[in-house]
Image 1 (cartoon, helix red, strand yellow):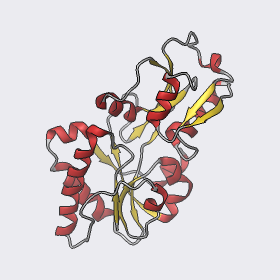
Image 2 (cartoon, helix red, strand yellow; image 1 turned 90 degrees about the vertical axis):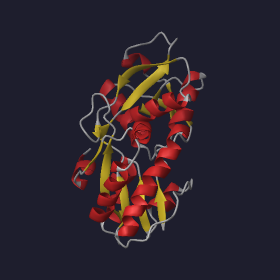
Image 3 (spheres, helix red, strand yellow; image 1 turned 120 degrees about the vertical axis):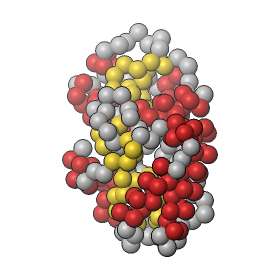
Length: 242
């Protein structure tokens, strides 16, 4: 039995995530639904997402649209109120070094790309789509494992370009972890954001209602830290079409 909210879990957000889960868990217990006492912070996210007893986890849109929509129930999608995005949507910032003289996307043809992983919509697939629309090819040079590491790879000159989830950018800046010497040259197209899922044995409507109770009960500073404006209900088809 697992609850996992590590997709957005920068240092200044961790306590808020714990408080969100505490309120959600209390609501679940009141409904007679067992729930783990604390959040898991396992690094084996695929094992978490495929846990047949999963209570709640956030996943990336690419794994969800690829396979997890067949193996889990969609609970809801948080709306982070990101600029230039409809409710529940997100996008990535295309970042390069501030001192890089290039500014037009086509000038980055053949450039070295840092990316967090091939199963990331925001750091991999969205950037590939952006490169295709821009008529360029990028060289996947450094697989970093995280958006933070990708941003640092560009800042330190190990790569020329990366796509960083816009909400992650905000959280890294608030945590003091955003590297100096980067600038945004463009944005990827908005897509449905990172979905919250539960195991197929569970009632997603009940999980959603209890999560909303947990969200409603958060202190103002926790809501500000998480940046969640509301919970949006998308049809699974919206992820498959993105």
